[in-house]
Image (spheres, helix red, strand yellow):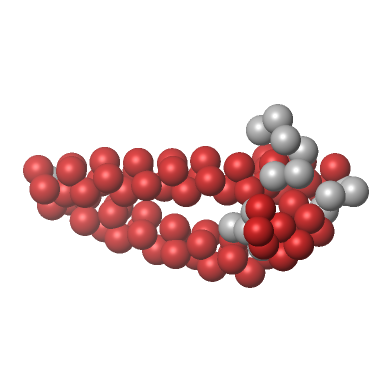
Amino acid sequence: MENSQTVIFEAHSECVESFSQLISTLELNQAKNPQFKSSLDDALEEIDKYNLWAGNVGAIHSEARYTLSLDYRLREASFFRNQVCWIV
């Protein structure tokens, strides 16, 4: 996260990757043990909520759509940008 212009977008990308890994792991485990079905359903619901939030606040935007991004909106508010990255 070296580039101060896309810090939130990079944190968002890492978060999505972590969710993807979690879901893949839960899917593999569900095949072996059906008790993981509720955990998988919970994880899918949480990633849906996260994607909705990220889309609404602009965390998913970078480069060509940079002016729509949360990085752009918080470009001069490093404290808040850092807080968002910590939360994500």
